[in-house]
Length: 87
Image (cartoon, rainbow, N blue to C red; front, side):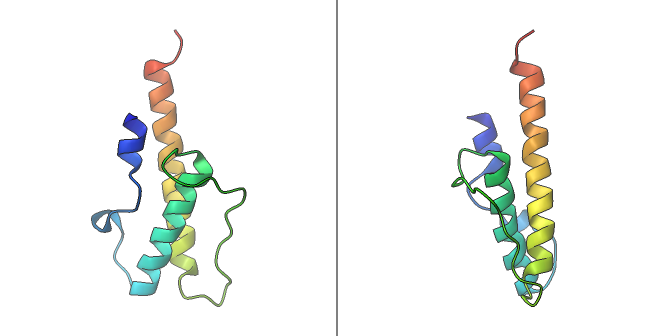
């Protein structure tokens, strides 16, 4: 439950880096995909996350959001497991 609260259901606007509207929209979508792929129970399961095409102006933001949020959730899982896991 604690991980779910920390992960949230959508990327809060105050946590997004500055950028163009397209970058921020891509970042939000990529972040959601990153959480889903990492196993967050609050996001629909994705078999495979696919970045937008290279011509899409949201691509750079999507890649940044995906990488950051996937890493952050995996880090939270590691901390949670080390604290509450078997001795």
